[in-house]
Length: 307
Image 1 (cartoon, rainbow, N blue to C red):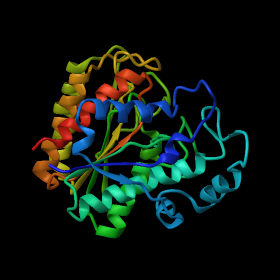
Image 2 (image 1 turned 90 degrees about the vertical axis):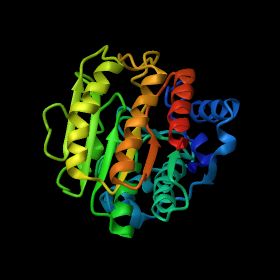
Image 3 (image 1 turned 180 degrees about the horizontal axis):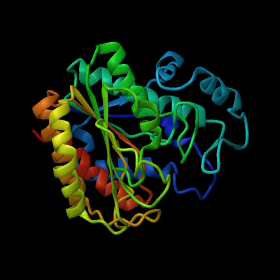
């Protein structure tokens, strides 16, 4: 299968402070691991464009987009919220990250690749319609989903979010949209302290206790996600691919290992093959132990490449 790998040099230039765990080293570690393992050479590599304001405005309030553009500093840091800051290149990085989701959608929907992985930062799934949060400025996966609906008239889109934190921004954007299903596993109680009590027919939120392992994740996917996805029959699947539920991650308390991420990716591929002509767009979210992140992403991408 042909898997696209989409990134941009400016994703390395977004810096919130010198010691922040959401650092440019995350992108470098992933790429180095893919090269070392002989995976990168077999990927279709693309450079992400910037998302347009029209594309952003499908999921973000126009005033919020203007607000972010106005705040972008020429030097130093500007705080957007308690967890999120912008430096001089942060706007470019987040615009290219959203643009990666748009390009991935185009490539997959036009049949130029089978699936795509967007190796981008800052992450996006905590950004709501009119707010930043949790290191996120714009919600890239939401931009991609809205592009698929607007540009390709896709009727049903599923998002699978296995980041250790609930994708509350994604839920905020799509909770009243019957065309979009969000399936989200997350540690609870934990930041952002949302999603545990808002389950609906299209918001399949599955909170898991601290120290949950691969077996508990498999039960959630098999018993909660699979029946819902089979009823919904998505035309394309997006993945909020956060790797911070890894046992070695310093910011959370879950016990996933690399093979668990391979199993999760295989699950997603099987659902996509059954309902969505194999179409998958995956975007990097969290994951803050560099070696664990790089190895888990390598598993994720290598499974995406398999026939």
